[in-house]
Length: 121
Image 1 (cartoon, rainbow, N blue to C red):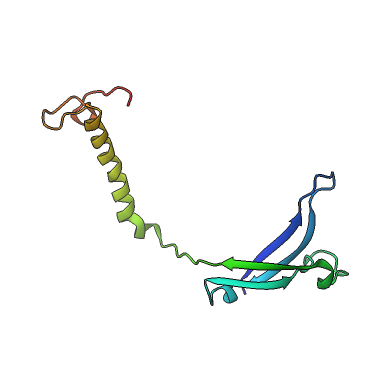
Image 2 (image 1 turned 90 degrees about the vertical axis):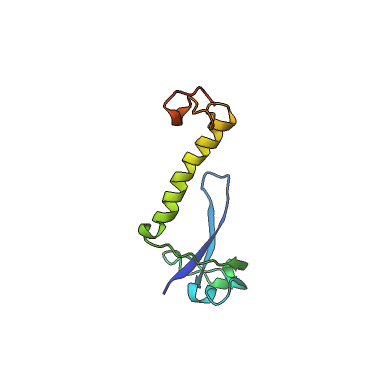
């Protein structure tokens, strides 16, 4: 089963470092039931920590989670978008070259698309 884990720490300026306050784990199946989830949770000790602590000793945490699930496809699926984005860079260069006067679209100027060199933009 997949869990969403939250660790709560108290930031410390002392030489001993930050202090672990507790953790909680929420099953992802609970989050998938709704896009927003709010509840109170008792903080739990670490799995590898001291078993002598009781949940009541650690306190509680009110948590509001907004969960969004994204699906990533194989890279082939994105090929048309990638090609379109790569071609859009050429369009931007042409528009910029016309705007700066480096390329006259009606006179076949000397800009980068006509084989000439262009100075700094």
